Image (cartoon, rainbow, N blue to C red; front, side, top):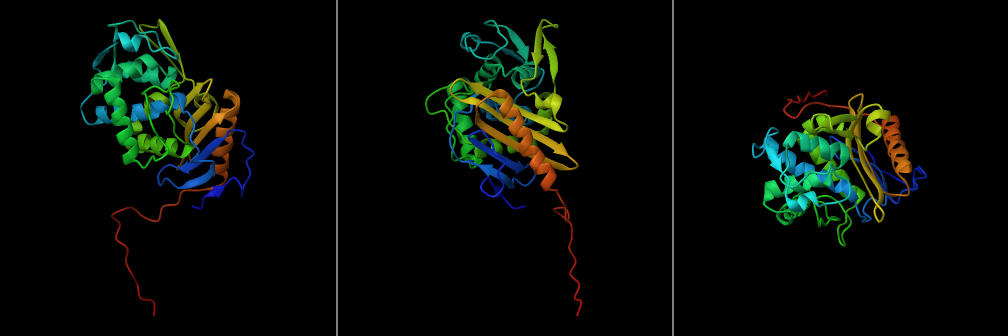
Length: 274
């Protein structure tokens, strides 16, 4: 697969940074200022979710574990489900709240539970970023609220999104939910990612917005065996963010196919045709 830059095929994007990659190989199919650094807002939670899913898959954490909300977690602000201090939810309930409502209180509570403190969890986030080759990224927190120096690029978001989807595909059990409830139906969850409802084949992944970050999105979708990840950063509006993610995905599905020439352990025989 060959990369197409915005200078070769102008998709007329209004967002300041964007990228489209093929999920299984990581091949870059289209880029627009892909390494320019922006504030990621809640797209930060892709990395937090990656570390949480690693802990679940290696047995360190169970979906049925009850996680208590600390005083700090309850005071997060921004998008949240208004956890009370010492209130507990299961890991699975918190995953739903994070993936659908982008709950800062839940991701903070899980970060504290896994690492002992948010600071230590953020250290783990940055270490993981380095291991993935995310050279444009510095995380300052686990939730994405604006903080000086908390920056990443559309390229790096694509890298961590791919890692999450390939190695922990069960995350899509949550990222594809459109509506759900918690607390015996008292708390309603509605997915902030409108593509889950409106775009065929959507598998996730995460929205983010603040007054400084503007509107960001990591969007993933699969059609006819081709899985794509489109990242939009610093978009002027929420609607444009979704429109341009769809534009990238449509471009990918219209112009590329995923062809297999064999599996990893297949034996290739050589025939001398002389």
